[in-house]
Length: 80
Image (cartoon, rainbow, N blue to C red; front, side):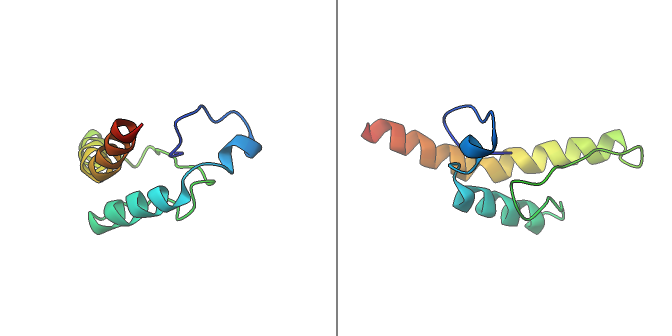
């Protein structure tokens, strides 16, 4: 997951993403008990051990964790 306006197509474009925003997202998810990789350059996987309710919980937690980043981005767009 990359916090960046433009598409991430390669390592060079990934390196220009907002690592501070990812770190904030990571910590908000951790606060809910969801353990993502601590660096945005790592992968996340779903396994057969994850039940539908686990995935639903993760989606709900991610929506809440992403809200502050969405609000920050909206403010930046308004500034121009």
